[in-house]
Structures are given as C-alpha cells and as structure tokens.
Length: 327
Image (cartoon, rainbow, N blue to C red):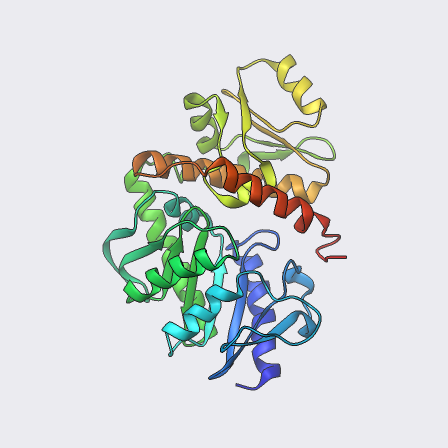
C-alpha cells in the first residue's frame, strides 16, 4: 500500500474509533500494513481528533526501528506480533471498548460464546496480564494470537486487539467482539451492562455525577473500588472510597478534590480538568463492569505494584497532555 494512503486510513480510523465509542481519550492505537516489512502506527499519546500525517509513524517489522523524532505508540510490539503471526492482516486496532474490557477481567484464557460471530468465531482467546508496552505483554498476546482462528483477542485487564485484511474487516471484528462480549456479560450477570447513560450529569465546572446502575450495584457490595483495569489504575490510582449515604461526608470529600462512590447515590468524579473528569467517570463505570465479570469468573483486581507502575507512567507522561498533545 502507498505510504500516504496507509497514513490516511489510520487517521480516519482514529476518528471512527472516537465516534463509535470504542475508545476514550488517547487510549488505544491503530496501525496499517504498508509492505511486507513495514507498517504505520499512531504516535504515542496523540489526540485522534487532530491527528496529522506526521503523527502516524512508519515502523519496520524486522527490528521495530522507526522514522523521525516522534515516538510510535508504546503498543507497537503487539501490532508487529499481529503482522508477523497473521500474514493476511493488513489493519490492526487496539481498543479499550467497554464490554470487551469487562470480559478481559473475568480471568479466563478462553471465552466460549453461545454462537458463531462473523470474523471472530465462537471462541475468544485472552492473553495473560502484562504491563502495557512490555515484552511480557507482547509474549502473552502472541500466545493468544497463535491459538485464535478469529480476528480478535483480548488482553487481560486491559482491552482488545482486533485486525483484518482491511480497515473495514478490522472494524467489523471490533464491533462483533463488542456484541459478543455484551451477550456474554448479560449471561454472567445482567447488572453489568444495564447502565443508563442518561444518569450522568455535570455538577459545577469539574464535577460529574454518575449514577448508572452498575456503579450503584457495586456500591452495595464493596467498601473500596479496586482496579480491575489498568486504565483505571492509571487515572484513579490504587482505589476509590465507597461512602455511606451521607451528604455532608460526600460534599466534604468532593470539596477536597476526592472522587468517591456513595451508596445509593452514585459516583462523584472530580479531576484537574473537565476532560479528565469525564474520562474518570467513564473508566469508573467500565471498571465496575469488570468487577462483576471478575466476580462471576475467576478474575482478581490488579496487583498493587502493577497499579503503582501504571499510575506513575500516567503521571509522568500522559497526564501532561495539553489539548490532546504532548509537550
């Protein structure tokens, strides 16, 4: 494929990911094969709404060397794994879509679906957990890819990797995966995907009140909200307190800049910017879904050390985004 056309497809895919809700913020990444030994991939931490050709980076499959001074996505290793293990693959998208993320926390190596789904089949393989961008994670993803006959695999406590011969096939796999995971979650526990998106309201400049059902149900069961997904660990840290239904205590916590979940009321999310607050609200909801999936399966919250690493990485690098760009 022509280099410029490949970059154009990646830029369009980034816009489609945002529009379709398959990602939030800059989480996730997109790549397109250019030739037998080269692909282009989104740069690290860039805003998909303003992505330029210069921010879609050519990478060599043979040695992962890349051109220019802008770093490619930290997940470029797992994209290379797809191109190496699936020679027919021409387009890859790594998403943090809600249902797939929740299923990834169920602690299972293989998800057996009730029926065949076009593009992904009837079994979804899930790679073991590894920290984002590491060789360990790439090795686990490679193991899942080798077992899979479909165009999608899960990354435990993280997200999904979808691919196809073309842009269209990769997106079709992502949408099929989300539908399949939704049906799987509904069978595990109907509370997981019964959220009402209308129950999210902005309160003040940087406070969001999220009272979707999955958060209200979680508040009935726990005293702290633990990380079941690594993007929760990045943005929220090691835990979020669950408070009794006490208006004064909730107002005091939020007034001090703390995000809390209140029994019978919902989550009050606050961060340094409205963008971060909205992202935190979304991620809390998704993490609650992951909690119930883990509870119904064999999943566990992420380990404290891994959470600390993810949080530090976010604070040192991604939190410095300004209008979606790195300094």
